[in-house]
Each structure stands twice: as structure tokens, then as C-alpha cells.
Image 1 (cartoon, rainbow, N blue to C red):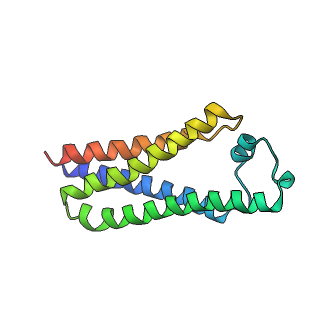
Image 2: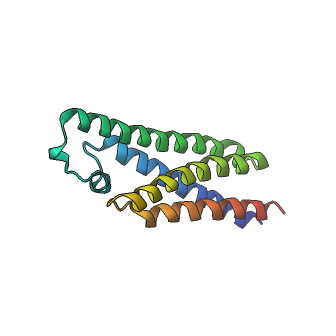
Length: 142
């Protein structure tokens, strides 16, 4: 069972890295992502400076949220989860899958109601890895 616990740990770590990566990309970007611009039906250069600023600030706020989820999950993974405290598995799943579900619902809304096409593949993989890690951790405790 120790192997399952280690696999779950690695899966959680990969999911956390992906959340952090998305957050860093959003925070470091100097313009909106192409699918954001497609959803808005505009090009970056065509946006008024105030719209650029506000839109970029919204994206950076989302990026900060991704990064803070990653930071919180890292602490849970490294300290209580690694110690084998069962509640940490539930907390990790709640934080990571909760953020995943919220963002996925927004991505679906954009894809359904605009010409924008968010990048679903890697994001859905993130959710699958997180869910698999949660389930592996539950099984490893039996």
C-alpha cells in the first residue's frame, strides 16, 4: 500500500506544479491569452488602454488564485499529508478539485458562448491526476 501512497503523492505534486505553472504564466503575461481575445472578439492592439489594463488585471487575479491554491496545497502535501494524516487527503482534494471545477465551468461557458477556445486537454488531465491521487490515497489507507 505504501506504493499507492507514493503514487498519490507524486500525482498531487504534479497537479500542484501545473496549478502553479498556470498561475505563473497568467501573472507574468503582458497581454491576454489568444483564446481570451477570441472570446472577446478583439485583438490586443485594438483594445483601449483601460480595457487592456482591466482585462489583464482580471487574468492576473485568476493567476494569483491558481498560485495561491498551489502554495496552500504544497503546505498540505509536504507536512500533514506526508505524515499520513487522513484529513490532509480530503483537504487537498477539496482545494484542488474545487478550483478545478470552478475554472472548468468557466472554460465551458467561454467555449459554449463565445468564439474563444480554451485549452481543455492539459486542464482536464490536471483534474484527472488530482482525482486519481485522491482515490489512490484512499485505497492506500485500507
